[in-house]
Length: 404
Ligand SMILES: [Zn+2]
Image 1 (cartoon, rainbow, N blue to C red):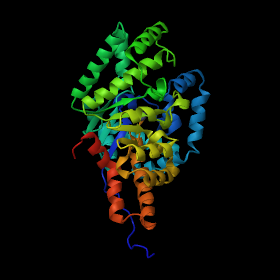
Image 2 (cartoon, rainbow, N blue to C red):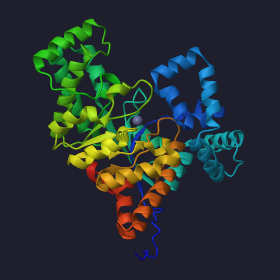
Image 3 (cartoon, helix red, strand yellow):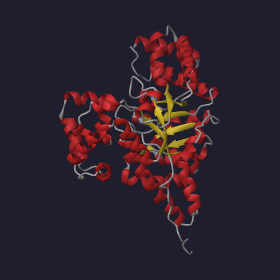
Image 4 (tube, rainbow, N blue to C red):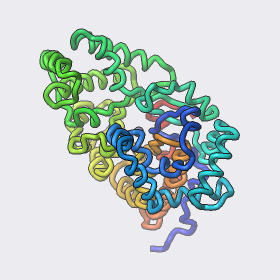
């Protein structure tokens, strides 16, 4: 078969809506040690602050952070980030060179520096999971920190559960307070979705629970000092996830659910997208986004999205942490699920540069994966670019009602 002339897929001008990331405060960024900047950019470094396990262990044993720092030197993602940032900052591509140039440029005008990064990456909107860091960074505050780039709130339900739980005298009171808080969050015009991290608490194998069972479990859970357990916490959390799905439906908002790998606090044995399947099958009409595409079980998540009409896949975690492997993962996802269900995201949770690095990695990997599909005679260049623009922004805009 003759090869189509001009098979180059060009997504360089395509805008980005970052479907999942975390807020930050300028003063917190300024308070960080500049020498550790590169390590904070990668996964191992990011997790030191995200994960209770590594954060606390790291405080006890400083050798853990030193090891993370050493490993930065052989992390492919970090080596690419170093060279790309050096190019941008006009400095030598060494750890010290980048840290010093970045420190100088950032301190001179933090907000201007961040905005320029986002503009260079073509970022037109940010969907911010407000459950980390805490206290939450309100949308307006974060919008000011990123120099006016539109910020959309993803309201995390576990934070609402903790707030309501401390006040509630019984399950009925907790349920009322929780539902009222979800409706209140939906009333915030910046809220575009709800999010659950039940995979970090009692696992994704969520089952239907009667009010009576949940009420009894609630009493046991409280007596147990709110420890996360299968016996006491799980029935209540499962019960509340059903209420959350109802509230999402009532308020016409998608529900984001963390699936697959996260920081080491995750209940990894019950974080597989497979575990959530019964719940997904009970909510066929409710748009549900599998955050992180269940990474590393991305093929299973893709299969689920290909078989259930309203299940979507958020590409963060595999982007950017799979670095070299992103292209291969994208090929499998594109070959399995409708591209209209794939949502680009960075999962930035440490430094603003992660948003820029992830966007650059993703754009290139997508051009190659889609270009390969063109070369292999599956799609045309025009179709490839259309699918690419959907993944980078259009799909998330449509799903979340974000105008552009
Ligand atoms: Zn996240």
